[in-house]
Length: 279
Image (tube, rainbow, N blue to C red; front, side, top):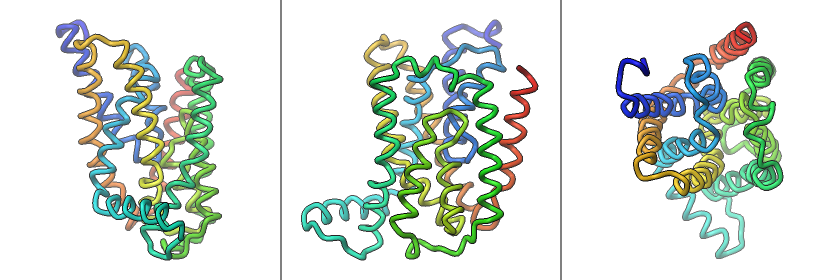
């Protein structure tokens, strides 16, 4: 493909395609980081790198903010109300604002530690295909256990701070490719007995800070080192990520409203085994 079309056009098409992969896999419980590492490898492309992969997450972050814009507006108002009055309200938006803040602490903390003290993390074995395959299989089994043993009776008003702390700790594992931020938070919520659709919405909302911060930091790093011409492919990736993310969010929420998540369990098992068989 790259030999049949001009190199610059191939770069744009490649960025567009990777943006679509990012958008769909960010919100489905199958790991966007793993797919952005694995798909280029099997297509014979060079590794897009951590900075590019994290940068196009901005499209997913903007998409989820846009999709939940009305609720997020209420959450922001609740944030200001909480810090101005220093009083925890029983209002659902105030509780959700606190939940998002608490759940974001672990992944932001560990992400910062890795960024500062493990600068070569992107080249470590944790980003290798073998590690991704094993983690994918293990996460599939955990999700299956969550589906089997989770009671799925809790709605939003039944969620407590303990559930959110566990969800936040689980979300921090998404630093490792193959874990899937949405997958591990959904699994944690299911183990806590939370209803599937509520778990999915909660997973999306608590992920906004982590996805946004990661995307902004890596975009700043990437754009600072690129020429104006080289920036265009990243922008294309961000835009295709945005639109595919909107589709993925809508489809996933509708799907979980009526179905279990075993289709993603089977997919992750097949994904992991396929990688292992190809090594």
